[in-house]
Image (cartoon, one colour):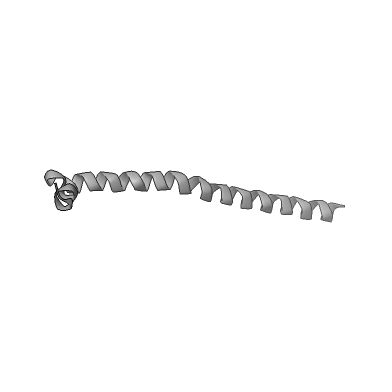
Length: 60
């Protein structure tokens, strides 16, 4: 067996490599998405804390 035959996958290469690519995309999204969401959440909490500090200063 040579590399050309391996990458051709017996005529099913398109389906096999497409499924590998989609799986990789889903795995990467499952890793990156929570990271981005965490950053957004932390930024939102920091803004809320600053807002509360300003309100508390002005009411004192």
